[in-house]
Length: 221
Ligand SMILES: Nc1ncnc2c1ncn2[C@@H]1O[C@H](COP(=O)(O)OP(=O)(O)O)[C@@H](O)[C@H]1O
Ligand SMILES: O=C(O)c1ccc[n+]([C@@H]2O[C@H](COP(=O)([O-])O)[C@@H](O)[C@H]2O)c1
Image (cartoon, rainbow, N blue to C red; front, side, top):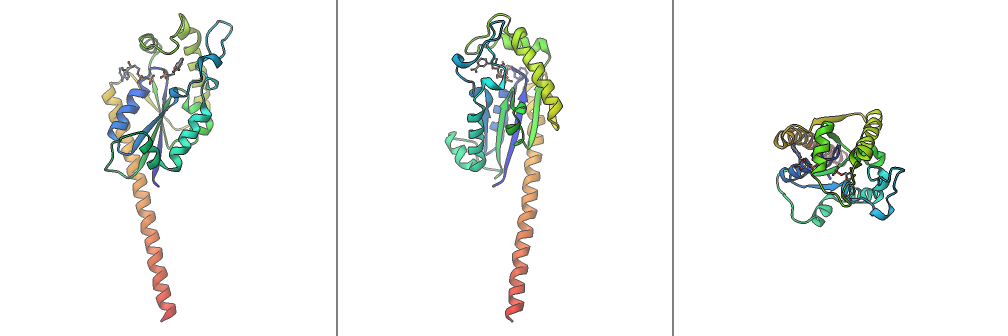
């Protein structure tokens, strides 16, 4: 089975979901696992001394469930894809998993699985403005961005930069189309490389078998 896992990380409201959805539309046999669908129930997320719910931490996420879903895909991408409803098929026979989320590179068991890592970044003021237009469940209380979201982002970013090499940083101020074009080209090139490697492997295996039968013929004659 030829399979490829791309991580689309980045700060809140950087454009991870937008880019991942567009990528999925463009690439056959692809699907998305989104980290923000694994948040724990509000009742179990602790509150800090300032009264802010500690949502921007790995402990607020069901990472075990997220890993189980990634493992399901890894065991049988085609079957996993069928559970996600109708998809764009045809073309390449390489299966692509897009894992998107704000803390995907900070969770080592997940980070280890990525073949390619992208991180979308935007400036503080753009991030704060975009965030103020979005309504989460529960909604951000006053002061939440500066009191919890941004400090946690800086902390996780420092940790990521000190432990995860090979990240491609993307400027989230580029248009949606520009971002898609860059990542699409890159991912297609990676997929073509995988197909090339497998092609060589199959050719070598076929050659091995041919030599085996020639040898058998020689022994028996
Ligand atoms: N490249 C972009 N340029 C301008 N706005 C964008 C871009 N990408 C996403 N957005 C907008 O930013 C907001 C957050 O995007 P989203 O993809 O949900 O971010 P994330 O998944 O990183 O939180 C949305 O309103 C979206 O339309
Ligand atoms: O989706 C939820 O249940 C949820 C509930 C509360 C907060 N969030 C916010 O979701 C943010 C991460 O998602 P995103 O799409 O903005 O990268 C993170 O900054 C959290 O503060 C998300």
